[in-house]
Amino acid sequence: DARVTQTPRHKVTEMGQEVTMRCQPILGHNTVFWYRQTMMQGLELLAYFRNRAPLDDSGMPKDRFSAEMPDATLATLKIQPSEPRDSAVYFCASGLQGAYNNEQFFGPGTRLTVL
Amino acid sequence: AQKITQTQPGMFVQEKEAVTLDCTYDTSDPSYGLFWYKQPSSGEMIFLIYQGSYDQQNATEGRYSLNFQKARKSANLVISASQLGDSAMYFCAMRGNTGGFKTIFGAGTRLFVKA
Image (cartoon, rainbow over all chains, first blue to last red; front, top):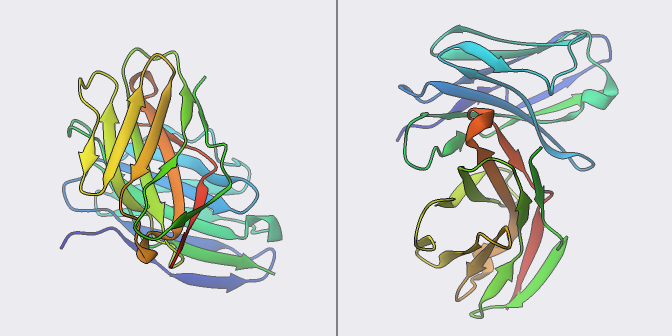
């Protein structure tokens, strides 16, 4: 049963600390997305990759956020330094561009709390 | 610019009855896809149904159907024979083809199914 995995599932950290979230997309998927979900803003697209190349990261605060795909099996989202307003659930999703419905399969999310 | 609007923050439905969740969209893309996702209290995002803008028939998946009215730019989700387990947050989403694989989400509708 293929699924997207994310680690850690929960993270509590103090303001100013670095946070790294990891995502393993479904094997064979060529597109990876990072979303942030908050009560106030809903689901926001932060960045997405196709064939490991960043296509759009306009939704991401550039001064503190960075997203990479070191290889096809790993995507990372890093926040440095973290701030309380970064507290949210961060979802990773993967998909296969060219599939009929282009469905995105979501991971379980990382719940981040910045104190 | 693309936009998704879900005007119903919350909805109540009696168990075993049908319910319609509204979604309107705006896009200048001639080709696009529309999605519905379910997010139960556990937090995961579950894909429900997809409608392509050029599909001739409305999409159906079990108890879910999508009432697609292209001229009105609406893509309402109909859930038939509601079950208690349908209580969740429901998100409408759209992917425009000129935006690559980028997907935007509506604010969501919380559905409560009453016994």
